[in-house]
Length: 353
Image (cartoon, rainbow, N blue to C red):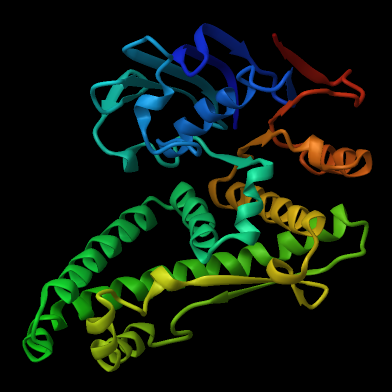
């Protein structure tokens, strides 16, 4: 899977610009604040239908413009595909695939696949469990549309249950009305749990391989998926847990059990990397997880996703830079950096002034 051309009009800092990409390594070189990350943001917009930088879509429209536009021309294994997005400072964005408008983001997911990594992805290791759940959700939503809709249904049921917990004044009355939400939530949670557990089982060996490679055999990684309940009969276990925790949830005003509380624990040489790993180790672990994501998507969709690396070289020594490029040589890679010292003979260099 590759992107051959990207068109930006009134998107972020670009008034009207076309970028051409080659199938292998593309290096976007320029000083800071020149719009390098804007290019990767536009590409990833066409993967997930949203930005990795902002939840306010009007922010991507160029200053003093009313509308913005991006178009990606992609080459896939069996066919080519064009994706267009129209942004407005006044309305929601519109999306077209091969010239045909779509109404839901779910229709976009899986059209093209990409993995994005930047130094900010260190939050995958250091920040709250929400970041690690997001990591799982992005992979699963890209490779399985039904998971995306399943997650949406779970979030709606969870919101309804939480609303009932907050607005009810009598717990005895609550017991008579909350059961329908408990059963729905438990059934959906079991399906999500199974998908996530399977993902981590698949992902772990690839992460271990990447970490071993990047650290020259000095570090081994172990990933453990933790949920409110484990194993067979998840839905029934959760249903009983919700009933047992009802008084607690009533006092808290929210649901304290379920897959929305899931966590991934990551260990490096037997030590929890989130709490005890150095920043360099945490960064390498985050990169290993992203390289594992690359492999999982390839296995699930049948072709290499696009790899987007934003200012990663500034955080890696020369040896690990070379290792990274060699490890990802089969995927189309688009890298942003302020300087590029490696041998550029096989790279497409795009300079941003």
